[in-house]
Image (tube, rainbow, N blue to C red; front, side):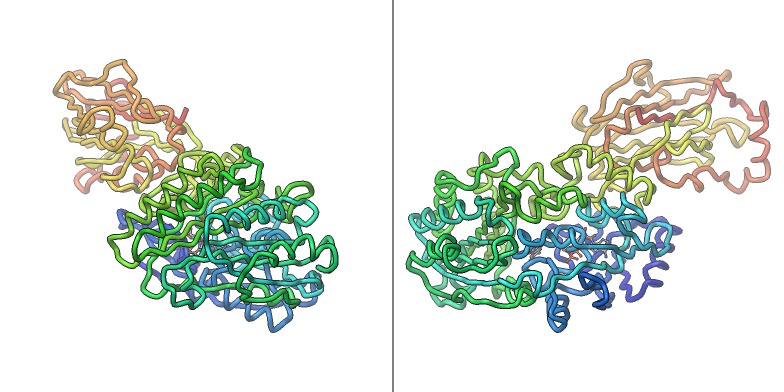
Length: 631
Ligand SMILES: Cc1cc2nc3c(=O)[nH]c(=O)nc-3n(C[C@H](O)[C@H](O)[C@H](O)COP(=O)(O)OP(=O)(O)OC[C@H]3O[C@@H](n4cnc5c(N)ncnc54)[C@H](O)[C@@H]3O)c2cc1C
């Protein structure tokens, strides 16, 4: 189900509806998440995709210093840049026209101004958001410092539905020395080495860490309208803002521009002065390559490898380029983006601590785009992307980069496996989980890449089930019940762990309900035993007093019997916290109202169940039970 919202109240009503009817929510604004995490997971029928593309509000407050703009999440970046330009302003943001504000200012919003002004998310002053309580909240650094920190970079789509962001703008006076140039060089291995060495030395120079941003990209000629269809070129785009060193002339020009000019090139744009407000809009593009599709993998230099790209790295790039150029009907764009900088560092480095954006210490970022004409080439594209990644693995590293936004493999569906997925600082993961648990404990806003809520209570059933919130209840409906589902709302075929138990009436009283059969399936169980583990009260196959480790948790299934000899099963699970994801099922976060409601024949006598001794054969000692603990 997709709900298109065009106002605050639409969003609020949708959140209420989802809460009341047991749906999860996946949020989409511009739809530019690389791996589709703004869509409902294909195996989650109980999910609503909330589309915000109709929330296109825009305003500018020129009375503040700096001026601030409030941008609706449904706008795309080309609309934002052009609307601000008419005020002589711009904001830090990315280089793609079609990217949506909603996800962009939770993910990164990194573009040409990153070294001078930081990431777009660093410039967000506040945002309006509908949280799980269906109310509109205005969040800034003082009203809710943790949520403000977490939402800006900590896992888009995890917290609530953002309606708009208020962002500090950049005025022309903030960078009056702005100059831009674009040169193109025919690709060759020798050329890559020559240009790469200039790039690495200039970008490593701390003196110009905020003044100069050079992009080095190996691009197909068709992107520039050339007819030599499969030739590739090296594009070098320089942007000087002069924040620390002023105008680009004299010795500065000789040092930072002349090396590029002295190698024969095609001048796409000479060194030209222009207002900084024009830069993001002028340079943003659509990456529209006719009928071509693309796969992209973005990865970054590991902070432990502090050096900028060296000759060995450029050799590995050239090896990969040789292979790709030999594949018919394939284009690619390998892009080197300088993020950080040594010494005092770029503004991205200087903004460390502002929010949960985790890739600040990275010196260099690589975008690897492979464009292909035929569907059958998609596997080749993925193969080349991963071959390049592996070949350069000693220079570059993806694992410690938060890939909830700059995604991972486009072929696989990912879930978070722990702290390393989120940031380079492990304590961040715990903080993100704390925020999630506070603002969305039931995991309403959920995809496989959202931050999992931390459950808070241990659960021990005696004789009832007791869920992780400490609520005690009896299962009063016969039939099969899901006791545990990890992660929550995973379909049976994708669950890591699924525990289902069959409850049957056995006795004269309504409360004489017992677990007769219990199946433990899912990836973890099947790794232990093909087809999972199955238990019946009639056989003697329970685990008795033994705990068995299944995946990240310990399980125990025991047999009991009543005084009249009715046999039943008990189920125990511990260390659920190790799963690191939201827990579904009656012992987890799922609603137990229906399972705990007596059927109509029993309803008149149900109140007696609460009276000690009036429980048919049931007693605290002889009852089917299930207990779960987090630790
Ligand atoms: C072609 C292309 C070019 C790109 N170029 C750049 C670039 O230059 N610089 C850069 O930094 N990044 C770039 N990106 C990455 C892009 O910034 C992120 O993928 C961003 O999250 C996309 O936002 P969206 O709203 O378009 O996407 P969506 O797919 O709609 O959303 C992305 C994520 O944000 C969540 N989300 C979206 N809207 C909301 C909302 N209103 N409230 C709560 N959660 C929400 C979604 O649930 C999802 O998890 C590019 C991506 C593509 C595909």
